[in-house]
Length: 125
Image (cartoon, rainbow, N blue to C red; front, side, top):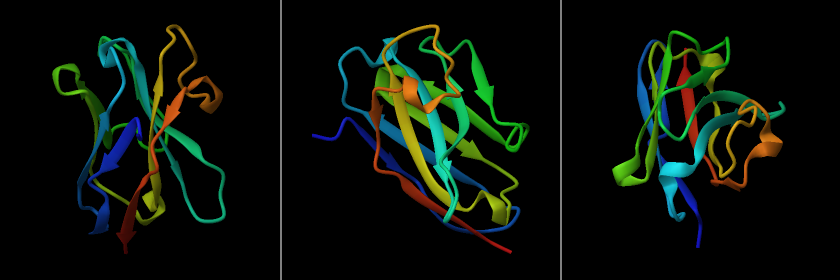
C-alpha cells in the first residue's frame, strides 16, 4: 500500500494555476510534518515547500515564495500545494513527502520517512 498518493498535476499555460493534493495513508497523519519536492528532467530533486504538523509553520524555496502556498487538512489526511503564476521553469515531477519526527530541517530530503510517486506538472510558454 502506498502511504502517499499525489494528484492534481497536468498541463497549464504560463501564468496559470494548479492545485496539487497528497492523501496520506499513515497512522496519526496530524503528527507528521509534510513537504513537497520537485524534480525537473536532468536535474536533482529539490525542495519546494513544507508545513509543520500543526500547520502553524510553513517554509518555501525562494523560487516559489509568493506564488505557491502549502496547506493541510488533518481531518482529511491531505496536504495541498496551491501553485499560482506558474512559469515554464516550474515544469517537474512533484513529490509529496512525510516526516514523522519533529524539529527536523524540512528542506532536507533525508529527514522524510515516506514519499509518493509524484504527479507531473508541465507549464507551457
